[in-house]
Length: 228
Image (cartoon, rainbow, N blue to C red):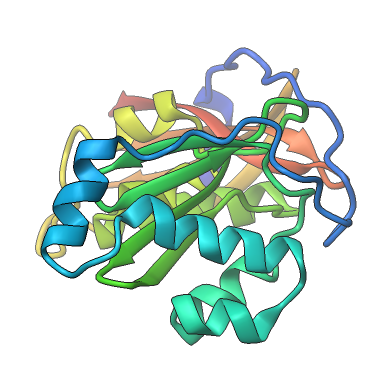
């Protein structure tokens, strides 16, 4: 299957609406809305001698707002600190709560690429061990490859760093099979409202429709498939 044939067959998806994000590492505003962890959850955590995930996540977030890496290192692993302190947009302005040990901080005033819409912290015990965050990728091909790698790793949160929830849901309907058909990246071509990035495989092709711009970053907004 040729790259020209794949590009010619790509369908156009609806464009994603963006607001230009703040430039890298701008001074972060204080949280506009701070949700407290449920009292019962805190009581249970205290009874077992552990710290509630929300409290740990908020400590790390607060240290980041103060640009205090030393304080951040007390409540997070080195990798988590490094990821958070390299966040390319202004700080999220709302705490969206925790689902189990995964706590989210989201944007309400700017539009950033991906369905994650901010920062997600994974808490283990008294430390944040993993940080996922909205990404600023300056090439359509980089966004497509980032999502594909997340799918190959079986990591939905990583996919949401650079793709919409719709695109991630579509792609993750099937599990990547390392022993299955081989995927070949065929590059990206212009569409009326963005780019179509193609992967070919025996029997068909997959198209990732990418929207955005270099200045504000690219994201995968939808995925389509075709068969030979």
